[in-house]
Image (cartoon, rainbow, N blue to C red; front, side, top):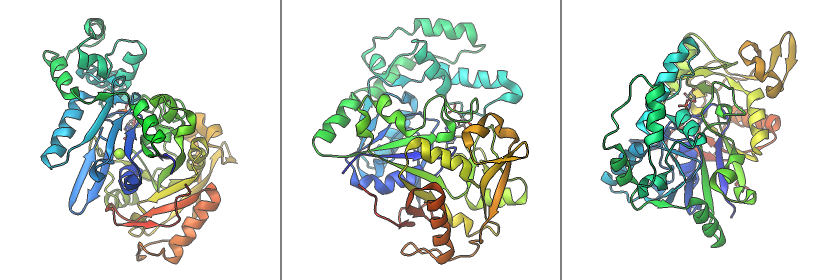
Length: 412
Ligand code: IMP
Ligand code: MG
């Protein structure tokens, strides 16, 4: 079987954590390849809800957990997550790539500081230091995980830089020692590990963080994250051949959400907004902020499907639509009185486009069954398949692992 990449097609929070956990059985390792502890991947098993920011979501299936060199690694988060799951009796089989960009407390302070400077144009970052850490990497001022673990990186120049630009410096005494301790015994070369596994006939699962519309280059800049979120970032970020990417599965929620600022054409305001937020429990898993909610945006979704080479799709949170009386999807945008379905053309004007909607038969009160889709749901799924040109292989109907309808077999 080939490797599989699971990537979020909206603004994050599509339910990737659940889908990765669901699919992990078939793979030897689960690999994080982008972002850092800005991510919040939620997995619900019975009455227990787990939220991981850094550890790959294959954890609860006992898989090997690989954190690739493209990840911005906060040693503090790593320590907390490893301690938390060890307490629960799990023994994580973890490898952290020695080339991961380290996030320091200085980066987190800088993140908050820049947000303050921006005032009303703030991005609404998670304040997890992601942007500054990647910027420091580009400036070659940040230690990598391996440098930190070996104690071979001099933080002097970085400290001097931050002293110049930060009004308040967080306490740094003892930080390097404690960060070093949390990396002991887990440093490795993740690209090498993946290539070896593949040579031995095992497959791996690449777990994307955030979503395509938050990609640093291809998202809604400047309201994006500090790194790439698209599937084609897997090979360069991990240092593996392009051919190792395998199949790309996109994850899309049946409606849209966005946390933080930035254009959101299908955003809903008022009573319905609150209804959807409460029904879907749409609060940020990392920051607890209420997520903005809106209708499914097919213009944006087509862009994401195409750019990522998505061949199969997991549609999530369908159960939420059975609690809402209205149901529509955005099929086009109206820009200066002209209709377009090209997201890339609309992108520079995204905050002023008018969404053009198609009303769909409401799913309100529909009984969902994981063995068989009911008629209106099946029609909706088939409509999406036609519009997007992909197979919808999974329809998720609840947070639980078991609340999953497997519609079509994954192709490879
Ligand atoms: P940063 O990644 O913390 O710099 O935040 C930049 C933008 O991306 C903000 O709008 C965040 O809310 C958003 N963001 C970052 N990570 C996630 C995620 O995992 N899910 C949803 N939004 C995210
Ligand atoms: Mg999330």
